[in-house]
Figure 1 (cartoon, one colour):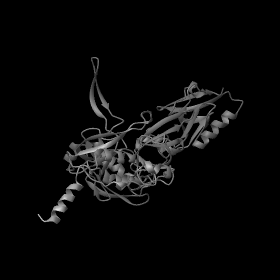
Figure 2 (tube, helix red, strand yellow):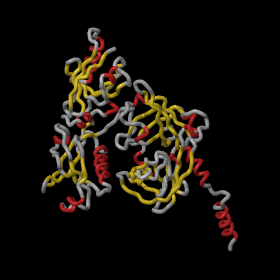
Figure 3 (spheres, rainbow, N blue to C red):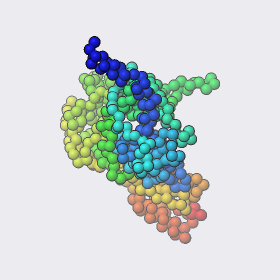
Length: 463
């Protein structure tokens, strides 16, 4: 063997020797810097509610991303207080202050930003620094779990083998065992980033308590056996970061409820090779109504793209809703529908969605111990009312042992009259209630409310 070839072979073997190879432990410790534990509290009327979750470090400037469930999307963002991010092992003994940026209106992901990366940067590493790879069925994958603050934010290792990948509608991998904390990263054996762990699906289990049998759905809140593939995650990362915590560009077409076409009917109609969405109800004077969409229409395609055949059935509805959310406000959206034997292409112009729960106005009246909330479209739909006729206010909160509680007022009550005066808007309800409280000649405030389709007159004593 020539000396040059021998030297080349010797150097190659030396480069691959165990002494120089990166160990799994080294990969784990380095990649643990991409995970932080987020803690905050929700400021309610009379107390605070602690909450927490895991976030992924998404960029070198301190961008964090966490799953939809970490911040409840019905709570006004100004109620989120004292948000802090804690790196693995909490080396400084206290967290880094964080600003809440807002929610991606398509995926539901929440974005946050660490305020001082000059301080935090040495302890963090963005997930985007790592190469990306995709596992094959049966291939091992591993991930990072993290304990909460009472256990000192300890990171620990989990692994499993890829079992299957399914469109849900996001491309989602399932592993043979719990592999990461929900919101944590998942890697291939060589350390390439392969996915972002979501909340585990509930697993159906049989339980016996004594001699009694129960069928139960059980979810592990601390570890997950499923993750969104890295390619999809990175493609969506940062695509819709709001300019302020309440900003969104959520398109809406005015359909209330959809359902998948059942297998037997699809087979009879020759539609077994695709997905079909049935429109439950088209709301009047909405984009869908103006475009000519009707109740019970069968939607076959969106902008010429045939709806794919997806399972389980709930995934098909999620796919349709996601496609609507991905459309642009004011830009034509073509729905191909089947109505009887006729196939139609209907052009819909999505508009900005109506007020959502976290945007609704609220007012707390300490004297009575009640918070009133603006009546929104969701309230109308839940009560089978015309969505155009939003009047009165909704009881959002009752303080225990308050005059409102003593008067049998309940959260969810629809306030329609105050002191015998009908209230058409939230502003009228607030003004009328305050006027009754300021009137010293009145010993009580009389409310006409609707609860479960029945009306009641309630009397709240002011003292």
